Structure formats: C-alpha cells, structure tokens
Length: 249
Image (cartoon, rainbow, N blue to C red; front, top):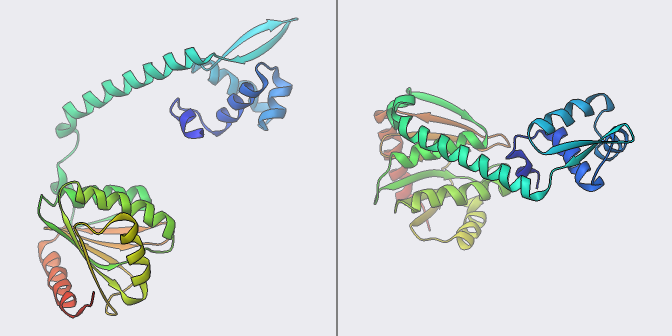
C-alpha cells in the first residue's frame, strides 16, 4: 500500500502522517503525533509538505487549526495529473534518448561493476540487447544464490525477457543444485530452456551472449562484472561447450 503513496513523492514520515489523518478523519497536532508516531517537532513541517503536495487541507475551529485529508475525488485528479506529466516526460525521453545516452554495447568499457538487484536488472537488459531472435544465452554455473526467494522472483522475470525475444537458454548447473533448478523449471516452464548438470562448476554464475560475459556473485546484495571483450567471451564460450559435452541431464 505504501508504494501507492510513494507515487506522489511521499517519504516514510509523510506516509505515516497522512495515514494517521485518514484514520482520524481530521486532527490537530497532538492526536496526529500520537497516531502517526512521528516526532512532535517535525509534524508541522511534514503537514506543510503534504499541503503543498495537495494531499491535506486545513480549517480553523475554535481558533485551532485542524488538518484533514483531501477527498478521494481530489486524489484521482492529482493522480491523473501525475500520469499525464509522466507520459509527457516519457515522450520527451524517447525523443531524446539517442542524444542523452550512448547506445547499448558501445556504452560499455571493457569491464563494468554492478551491485544490487536493480543493478542486475540493468545488466540483463544489456545482455538481452546483445541477443536477437533465435540466439542462445549460455549459463555456466546456474545458481540461486544466498537469497533463493529473491532469485526466483528475479530470474523468472529475466528469463521471460529472453523468451519474449525467442532467445533460447542453455545452462549448466551443479549436481548439488539439481533439485532446486528442476523445481524452478517445473514452476516456470522449460520451453526454450535446456539444462544439464556437472560437478565442475564454481560459485560464480557466468552468462555468455554474442559479445559479452557476465560474472554473477549472487550474495544477499548481488554483484555483477560485465565484460565487453570478444576474446574473453570466446574463451568462456569454448569452456562452456567443453563442460556441456561431459554434463548429464
């Protein structure tokens, strides 16, 4: 639910105060502080920001200022305005993207470091951009990492990124991870996905496209090394094919 409030640019304290007002219907400083749990010294500043964002209004009753959340109809208008603004920004971005940012692989240095799940998301969009319909993404050492639930959520989406372009995946996993990998494929499907198993894979997951190699260390806060070097890519590709030949289904 808090994600909806963040659309309007609300931080955590602003969300607490706004939700307190929704519960109270109307309120002065003291009940708002009590209900929201924010510091008394900060509440007026927070309320002023909510007023500027169009989410709260005020009225005076018995010489005391009261605060009320704006009605749902007003929120709908604000949301429509926000969406219209974002659509305009999107059109402007699409029109100027080639001038604002270098394109795809040409943007890369030989090696780039990415951290966190958002960093990995960027990496996989780059990898998918280096493959076309009918190509194959090769994975050596397919690995769920330390946060299995997050990995399942993440890779179920990135796999679809490849499959939507009709890109195949060939993967080699460790025998110790076979049960987890087969469970994942049973849930999300095996179409365009071929996997074998071998003991000769390490802790890194290595992904190989037409021109790129990515080394993934899937810790709680994952790390990716993206390498743009054709000779290194070809070396990993040859190694993948060697291990593939001795791996079992």
